[in-house]
Length: 181
Image (cartoon, rainbow, N blue to C red; front, side, top):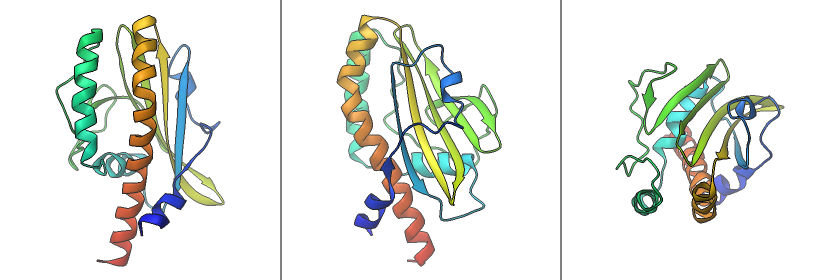
């Protein structure tokens, strides 16, 4: 099952239908990971909850380290070491769902993110039909200054590992639920 999840999650260009590039003035970093959707009823809110509920345990260690680095660089950060999203969360623009603030809601896309003096970032969760329905989680970052560039140099490799692992976790969870085990 793990190998199947790994083969289903792939790094892709940010989808052209995604509103992510319109959510920031300039983008200096972006990536996107995509997987097929097993449930055609799945909406972007469901995908957001599924992906962020599947953070591996080692991610909390990295989040703690991120908090230390962010503090040293003067970045704003919460002490949260989890991405947990409760099922009863209210999805409204300006509301915080899990760690992130909702910035945009469309029928097939949810954009969340934060602004800081050193960088702003947005995460898009979009569901698109490419022969099969897919969910793509994309991240874009607008860097404002040298501290933001240093932060991204440190965080980028970890970000890619975390994003892929969370998508793989969501795919494995969906497969687990489909098999009924």
